[in-house]
Image (cartoon, rainbow over all chains, first blue to last red; front, side, top):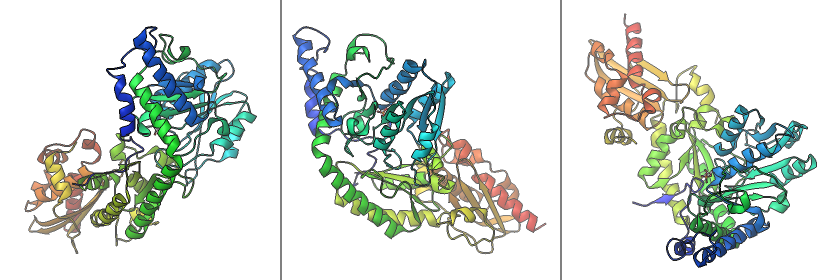
Length: 400
Length: 122
Ligand SMILES: Cc1ncc(COP(=O)(O)O)c(C=O)c1O
């Protein structure tokens, strides 16, 4: 059976060039980079080279990069580390309702520990009102945390404008750029961010490695206490092979950014147009244009997301859904909820996220396989072609 | 995550559709997870002679709907009223724990349809 992977916002395959770069660091160069002897020296150079590769991609100095174990750790470090470092100054944090759980649940944790958090709403396209953001800032505000791009919809937030507002009010600014890096140019100088988080497995490096950019002079209390690694900012013996892989993946991302953007957008746009034309009664979730080039999130009216994903899976297509049934909770996606997507449409939201390996043939295949699946499920749905009078379901669902 | 039986009923659901001029119709929904199940019955001499379903929901919701129609077909109304959600799940060799509460409503929909029939045919 054909296997088509369109879930690259969940994770990506490790690039062959990246595997090649990291392999020597398991056996041949196995040393601890903190050791002074030959085995350590051989390896510390590789860690520093990776630091430069990451810094080059983000346009910062290598000393401003700290390696972490994942994107979630970076977000925890930025939020908790800032809250602890700045608690004498204030107790207020501003974020959005559509952040990844790595930010949202960390904010909830901080709320339980005496901090106050403002969760900014989004409009129906999933965008923020920057006037509202600015108005939320008080003299007790110590941190603004807004993701660069949303993992579910692909929406891109105006990070440079938010950076400008944060600077004007002298408030620290963190961005979760896990989904943006590799898909868009990400420049910490132009965007005026103070903290920025990335994760390896979204850009062709393995799971379990990430990095945080910490602007020089930004004080953070460490999350992990222990040895003196990472200049006392993050203890723990380095994941050398993972770090080398992250460096290589950043180098590739930088070299290919224009080409990659154009290719992903061309494929995504074809998929989007094809689905809308061939299926009908489809709702685009997210902003029509301010969106990552690889992400398409759509709801297919009258049908539920998990059934759709299972049917895709039977045809070898891997995608993901905002349905309650796939979230592990009984609620549909919080991002769909924040955008006021009507409930049955939220349950049907389906995300296709393209990646480096997708081809035109993949798009052809999905466009061929998808319409009959949707039609079959619609014919099974009590919401489709409902001829009853005064049907409660119809009032809301038939809006398309 | 799903048993082979669930996947069988999910990919080849039995008795999908509506019955024109059904003798009884039952609909149940779960507001939080969004599932909606609708059962249509044809009844002769207190025996279910035809049963069809339409469902909006996940794999478990579709499979339980399909299974309950198979189990109810040919039963008397009283026998059918004894079918429980748990029995439907068991006939499918079980459902994942988190689905037991949200998507396991098919017997409830069947009971609603029988109630509707009884109300219309006192
Ligand atoms: C926007 C965003 N932030 C954070 C994370 C967490 O990254 P990780 O899986 O490396 O912990 C993810 C990935 O799931 C993400 O999409």
